[in-house]
Amino acid sequence: MVRLRVNGQEQAYDDDPSMPLLWYLRDELGLTGTKYGCGVALCGACTIHIDGEAVRACITTVNDVAGRSVTTIEGLDPNGNHPVQKAWRVLNVPQCGYCQAGQIMQAAALVATNKNPSEDEINNVMSGNICRCGCYQRITAAIKAAATGA
Image (cartoon, rainbow, N blue to C red; front, top):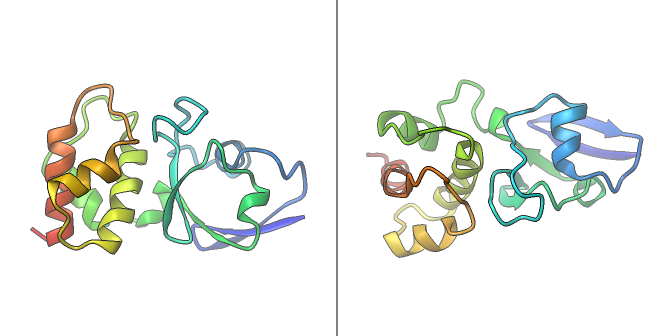
């Protein structure tokens, strides 16, 4: 049995521990905010936090997170008021929105550790998160706003 904490709640999983965490979150726990994109950690749609670090859930197994803390977009802030989420709304970042949970989770991990990221730092950290709609300028602006509290 694998024990883990998801969005602050203790969970126990007593099935195949090699199941991708993405499917555990979506299918077993009903946390569908984390999206399936490519399945090989190249697009960032499935980005979550494990112990505060941005990680791709599609290539992480349930067993990999035994005893650890997992945060999904649903657990980032119960009311959607994390500074990154607020900046996303104020600056109207999403277009289609499919990638946005992963973008927000990656950005939240960045601003947790860097309160004044340069544009190069933002581009470097966010380079693994693909937005098919091309909202990169708004994403960068929202990250800068969230990081500085603007």
